[in-house]
Length: 459
Ligand code: PMP
Image 1: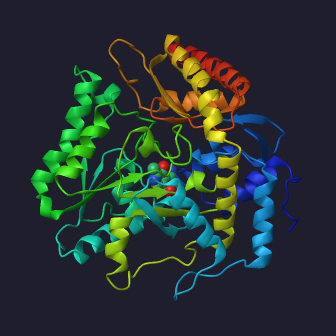
Image 2: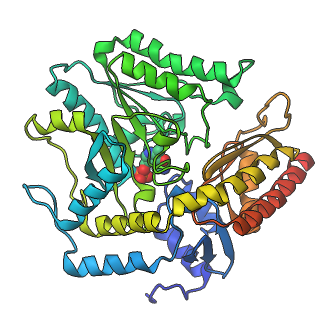
Image 3: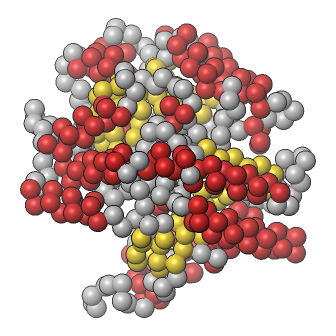
């Protein structure tokens, strides 16, 4: 076989891909017919494909490349760490310097009561850890019946059996015998789609109070934790009403329920603070982290654990749980360098002062487009909702998502990576996006929306 490199013609790469590579969240046979887009390089906020087309990546990969592409420092740190110590584990009473240094750094960045980290290879694995950790914690405290974890419909917490069960995605639960027992769900705080005649504020309270009702139904002695993303990401960048989180916090405190903030997307600057929990004034017991932790340059995730939980778990004998790649030295070294760059270059502060307000202004102005029923943005994650009838907040009748899919394809053609979730178009760009990048993003988005409108009304 010829050596497979960037220099092969696109059609040849696509044929090989179709023959041997199964893609996540993809209908394989359908993709094989049209051929996958082949990305060959990236720099800053720009991707290049195998035909030389350039695209502004308004999704930062999968919400993860917070510092942007092409930072040589991370490549150099990875190479140096591979030479020094490419692998060693942290089982058997052993540790290594990258894990020590990254843990200390995370303790410094996390809220004051959180000074401990249990590593994983991904966000999904970290959420699996959380399921076992909170149950083990309550058992060690003499409350072994506190096992049920309450989550939300349309939440995303990963694709492992545990992570996908914690998540509330009906399409995922429909495959492979999910969810596992011991997970309960309340409704999401999606005012646009589900708020009816309530004001956003009343709706936020109503949805938060579902948690209290669920705890009462299950019995407080049977509930271990509530898990939620500060802002739902994969569900469609659903920004909760301002009343939601304070009420959730009150309920968790009142009923002795642990609060797990899944910061896999919201962490590391995405919402304008180091963590989404700070943006929403949440006091979590555990925070799930991944993605922006290494800006996606190396796979790594983890659970940031409060001192109270760590103290109980550390004094309860062996915690019989762990992954070969817990605190992987190369990933940990890359993550540490990524955090250094985020911090020393003041990337989050700069984004807060410049690009975020500019993007918010331009993003909200999209509400004037005839197709757009609602705009949402927090820091650098945003959504626009397409509708055939603005005043009724109506969804498109046919398959929800068809219009979104059409719009996404126009975006690609126009050199913009935006993702769609149903009729929602979403962005989560690198935090190094500049104001002139915003102009390009908006111009391409508007062009794509115009084309989508023309197509939707022609059909
Ligand atoms: N939690 C949240 C909130 C996520 O958005 C994701 C990934 N999109 C995960 C968990 C799972 O992370 P991973 O894909 O790294 O397993």
